[in-house]
Length: 249
Image (cartoon, rainbow, N blue to C red):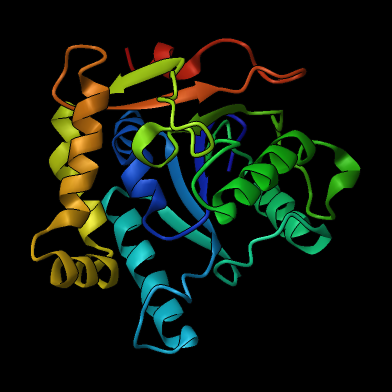
């Protein structure tokens, strides 16, 4: 991978988080020639009421791979157990090593405050890895040419609300994904183990409909049918220009 290649890494907790929260932006970046990578910290081993952990984890890995491949992307997982995602030394090391291998230009992850702790701990892992992976001694994996601290964005919390206050989250940038909503739904539908369980439980395709409802709510902010919203991390040493707004006006 050369230093001229633009790489987006969507670093989320579970299989299907990326498709729900930023699938449209990933599609748009892919069309601009970016390398698209989707990574999950957790293996998805709690994603079934009937199947044992290793079996459903294997299924969910295949589903994540299929969804990424639909848009020419690559899927990765750190394979940590569901509901046990922890910011600790070993998991932090795995995250830094993955970032070192991929050398992302742009990272999208969960916000600091979200409805479950797997998401919040993933946020910490992403922040740590984004800041640390360019440090030469942070990993034994060789630095790629052009390595630098990437742009970092936080996707919406589930339902776009702060789980502690119930208040709507105000984004710093909202991106139109109206032309790509069907492809985004196709990516999400690859996660059949989740879709079928919810369809049987709710009697409708709630999995896809919930995604479309939230995308429509975000679209109303900018006068489009569907959109995805983000907040940019503007901490010390991180890039300050709004790359998403510049790339995807």
